[in-house]
Amino acid sequence: MRILVVEDEPKIAQSLKRGLELKSYAVDAVHDGDSGLAYARDDDYDLIILDRMLPGSIDGTEICRKLREEKINTPIIMLTARGTIGDKVEGLNLGADDYLVKPFAFDELIARVQALLRRPQVNLGTALTIDNLSLNPHTYEVKRGPNIIKLSHKEFALLEYLMHHQDQIISKDHLVNHIWDEDSNILPNTIEVYIGYLRNKIDRPFPKYKPLIHTLRGFGYKLSLK
Ligand code: CA
Image (cartoon, rainbow, N blue to C red; front, side):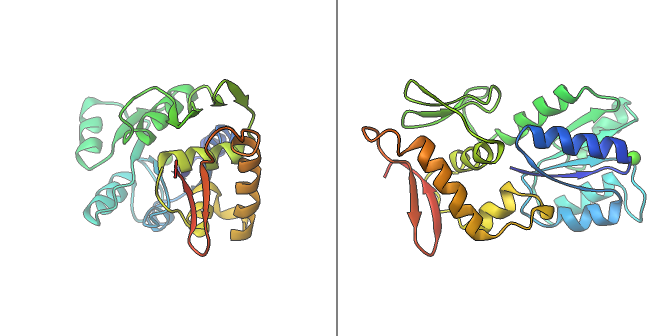
């Protein structure tokens, strides 16, 4: 999952980026309202963390309003130093999905990020599953049948994304844009390498189980039972 952080205080922006990356998210950070809006219009983000007070010609509430007007529905968590009920209601009315008052505990932010990202899932708080493969976004435990599987951050992020989009064909470009940040300069062929790593961990060691990762030449990949 790829997250955009729009936050002008460099310390907070840096610590958010680092903290979220440790949780296997790809993160781009920008520091003023105008870049925030320009980046947020790119629909490759799965979530936006948006500070309310920003330098530049447009602030957080305006960015939020514009995005919703443009039917860009990327989930938004608003950050603000101001915490009155009126501010919260205004932010939520403008289309933010959640609201967090500074200073906040990083763990709380993560919990809210995870809650928003798993919204389409029916079973809140439980692991994502397909066949006998399970991935728990909270404990980071991945299992195939009774076997615990150890994944790197990027492998985990890739598998989590595929599990959220089961039975859909996902192109390499799409995966590049959702799993890596803009500084990574990653090539679509690198995706092949990572898909190979994943196969070697979740499919190949278990010949008795159904293979789950499927390559559709020229189109991309699909995580499915068939
Ligand atoms: Ca600010």
